[in-house]
Image (cartoon, rainbow, N blue to C red):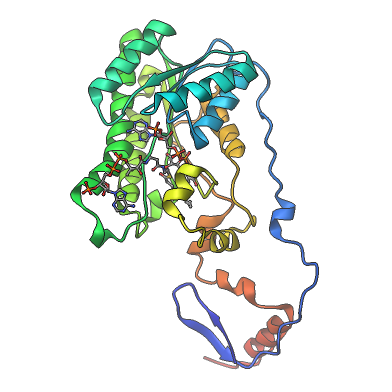
Length: 324
Ligand SMILES: CC/C=C\C/C=C\C=C\C(=O)SCCNC(=O)CCNC(=O)[C@H](O)C(C)(C)COP(=O)(O)OP(=O)(O)OC[C@H]1O[C@@H](n2cnc3c(N)ncnc32)[C@H](O)[C@@H]1OP(=O)(O)O
Ligand SMILES: NC(=O)C1=CN([C@@H]2O[C@H](COP(=O)(O)OP(=O)(O)OC[C@H]3O[C@@H](n4cnc5c(N)ncnc54)[C@H](OP(=O)(O)O)[C@@H]3O)[C@@H](O)[C@H]2O)C=CC1
């Protein structure tokens, strides 16, 4: 007896299907969607530009810093761990030949953010590109969450993004300088998600902040855009969200493109959104997830499991039904 389960958990059919044929050598979808990881934009796209990237020492922040630096930007990366930042800054600038400065900054502390901006201004001036990428997250049943656990994530993600955006926004307005602001959120900022509730709530807040400012601060020359990445392997994310490695296969199985994203792919999109090629783009929310979100959302998407022989049988059954 075979049943086709809908994502709601209901059974669509309960009928006797012939055993599905054993498929040999069927291509995985990832074979169609190989990543391209070199810098996408023309060389020099960020010449004479200064980019400020929070959490730029690791993971996706590091990848975005690398591509912006390859394209000619001077970069300032900021987070809590100065040793990590300095190592990344040294590696990237020795590869690209462009300056990368490391500044210690805890984005949860507005005074620390102001000091960090003071240091950046003294070193290089006000930035043309701001990427709010720093985040904290961990899986946890919500009933186990303490107030401090809630605060540790929402302070980094929502308050941290707000403090950086307000500090830089006000100074840029004062200096009459335009800039591109980009926030890195997540696909569940839109849907919500159990087990990462502080992150879901805070990322949704970041999206509301950025969409609101896209409307309000366009008059000052500021653009605000958002990328919602799907799963991309980084130590920071996977150690806290899939510590045993158990969920990775099911994630890949539900992604129509059959693989995780790559940091360099995300970095190319971030570079485009932060570049002059996107100067007409503001208030945009770009989902970048290999199709995972729509794959999880569609009521009938589990029908991907139905084999061609089973489809013949289903079609005959449907066509054989008369009346309602
Ligand atoms: C598999 C990937 C698929 C999809 C990915 C989708 C979205 C991804 C979104 C992301 O944001 S990934 C990026 C993840 N990166 C990070 O989280 C890096 C930075 N994180 C941290 O520094 C810590 O994890 C932090 C967020 C907990 C903050 O560190 P901090 O030193 O400030 O906090 P403490 O360690 O002092 O803890 C504060 C508070 O939280 C409680 N807590 C910490 N971890 C857990 C846990 N795993 N479960 C429950 N509670 C936790 C801790 O107990 C403290 O509360 P109390 O004082 O005990 O009440
Ligand atoms: N990887 C993925 O699958 C996905 C990631 N994302 C998002 O991408 C972004 C990057 O995540 P990823 O690279 O994976 O993970 P990482 O853990 O590598 O990046 C998080 C960065 O945030 C910095 N950070 C944390 N707390 C603070 C703080 N209080 N002040 C300043 N900086 C801080 C960390 O540096 P330090 O410890 O030195 O402070 C670290 O560099 C995040 O916004 C995340 O939510 C979204 C969806 C999927």
